[in-house]
Image (cartoon, rainbow, N blue to C red):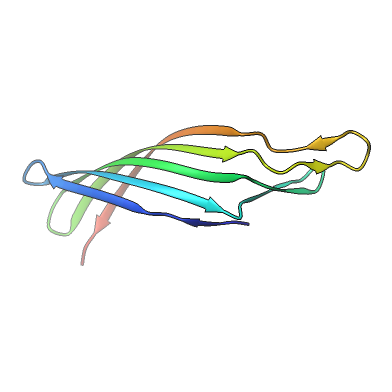
Length: 114
């Protein structure tokens, strides 16, 4: 279990009569971050688990009640090295190493207003 603060800033602009383009930037700062490991039944305290996310939303006003949208998102997650835990069986210490993950995804949807 951990906690995070997620400041976000965004902007959008109408590029045609019915078409909007935006930019969203979010930074998630994690603190008291933990990771459970099931085979050894250990819980590691991570040095940090932060996420930077950049999204490009596009929406099209189909009619006065219906919008179509999609959003391309790029995400970078940075995990800082955890504490070391002794295995207790003479095999030494275990820890979660520092790592970085890169993820991209696409959101599609419909918004109905009434």
